[in-house]
Every structure is written in C-alpha cells, then in structure tokens.
Amino acid sequence: MIRLKGVCKSFGSLKVLKDINLHVREGEKVTIIGPSGSGKSTLIRCINALEEPTEGEVYLNGERLLHSNHVQLVRANCAMVFQQFNLYPHMNVLQNITLAPIKLQKIAKPEADEIAYHYLDVVGLRDKALAYPATLSGGQQQRIAIARALATRQKILLFDEPTSALDPEMVQEVLDVMIKLSKESITMVVVTHEMGFARQVADRVIFLDNGVLVEEGPPEVFFEHPKNERTIAFLSKILR
Image 1 (cartoon, one colour):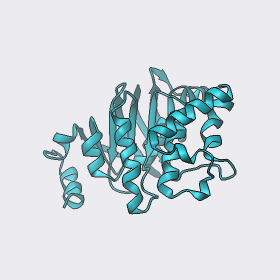
Image 2 (image 1 turned 60 degrees about the vertical axis):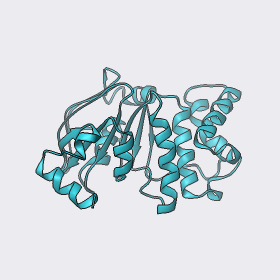
Image 3 (image 1 turned 45 degrees about the vertical axis):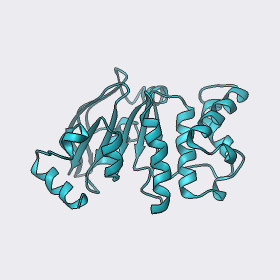
C-alpha cells in the first residue's frame, strides 16, 4: 500500500530525512517511534504529500506520488489524523464529518449522514452529532477527528501523534478507539510516543533517529531484543 524509496527531505541545510526505504503492506499496522526531532512527522507528511521529498520516491497503492497527481492520489487512498484536531468551529460534529464526503466525494447528504452516524458509533460519540467542537473535551474532539477520517472510507489511515495534544486523562479514550480500529483491515501508520500502544497493536515498529531508519521489527522482538545500540539506549530511557 505504501512504499518509500530513498526518500530524503531537507529544509535548507537541515537534513530531516536521510535515505528512507520503507514498505507497508495492505492491512498492516505500523508504528513509528523515536525522539523528538527525529523526522517522524516529516516522514508521515511525505506519505500524505503535505511535504515533498527533496530526493526519492513515494508510492501509494502502486502509483508514484508526483506533484501533478498528489492531490488526487492522496484523496483516493489516505486520510490523516493530526496532533491538533483541526475541526471547523462554526460547524457541528455531523457537518464536520460529512463535509469531505459531500464536497469531495460527491456523496448525497442522506448517505453521508448515515456514514457519519456509523463512525460516530465506532468512536462512541453518536450523542454528540449536533454539538459544536468548543463544547467537547480534547479527547472527544480527537475521536471526532478520527471519525471524520474514517468517514472518507480510504484504504490508509495516517496518525501524527494523535494523543500528544491531550491531557493525560484523555489519552486512553483515544487510544481505545485506535486499538479497536487496529483489529480492522485498515492499513494504519501511526507516529506515537505511546510505547504500550505500539507494543499492543503494531505488526511492526519502526525506530527513527536523526532522520535515519535505525531499526524495525515486530513488537515482541523490537522491545525485548533490540539490536542497534541507539535503539537500546532510547528504550532504556523510556521503558524504565
């Protein structure tokens, strides 16, 4: 579903990604971890065409992502959940969720509403359909953002540290929704600092440091038997 080939990204003289090669299979759940500033968010933004690689190639569902086709290709394959919720404050929850299906996918409003209510059930917030974002907690807003992404019914879901903007007591309610999603056939790529979540749901964990893909593997191997010294040092600090 996703392939990165020799991807590099620089901002001026700062090299943020360095020769990233990565494959994500259909239905696979991949978590990307690493210290702040390691390039995790830039990597996922390159997949979603929010950043254009300085070098290298990105493929979605077998088709190369180019400047000329990136909007169409991303819309046809990906939905993304950001650190900030990015809900429209002047629209209620139902309107926020149905906006893309109606405007971009040309789905009739009654069908879009039905889809929205289905995914509100998935995230446990059907009763908030007519509420406005300002009346919701941060955790509820992020769950609505997940429902909005699901309502596009894309093949790939990308998450960029979806719990980092939440108060600690709200984190688990969002992770519970994501754990539920991980049991579905959706392809998921998740940038996260939540090691317990990565251990529980990932098919594969990727460790990024200083723009380099240092190590990857299934969670039971990655967390229990890391091979690279940098990985060992990182895990020793966060898994105490």
